[in-house]
Image (tube, rainbow, N blue to C red; front, side, top):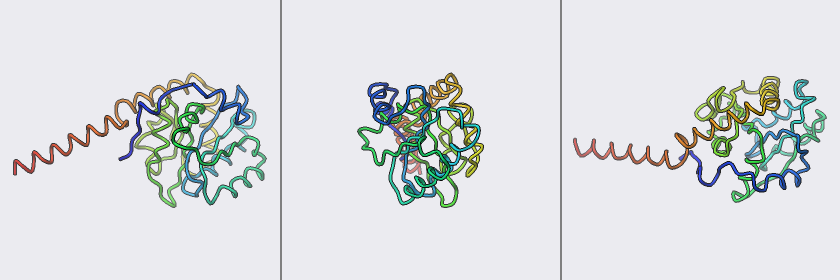
Length: 216
């Protein structure tokens, strides 16, 4: 089942400073994290295009790209072509035991999924929310199931670099809004989308099925 473990992935600042230094990210930079396979349905190329939009030109936004895939080299070339290569960090695959540091280092998660080809709910959305991070996503795949627009993050149209850039700029320039959305995201994981809550819902569902069968 989709979900995340709020006890394992939680707000934790330990190791964050060292990781930023390792990735050569300035203290004042705002980190937009992408986690997933580097394939078309993830839409990470839209974030790269967003970084080149005028609204982000003077904001210290750095995108950290976690994952491998067939489109990685093409997207790296796109970043060079658009003049934003210095604003990206390509870290490749990260072990599950280390991924929590990346979520906690980030200021926001970007999940600009596209509808063709179709994608499902990306667990990274729930994992980032569990670490109290706001999520910017598109209204496709499973994003709307997890992201409460305006409360735990922002929903933007798919394949729209300008609107994605505006959403990133809004959060990048408003730390209080990031904290408020991140806190609401963590609360939603604890109340609705964490494994303990989801497991209980499954147990109750199957109990009702058993009771219905016995009653019949």
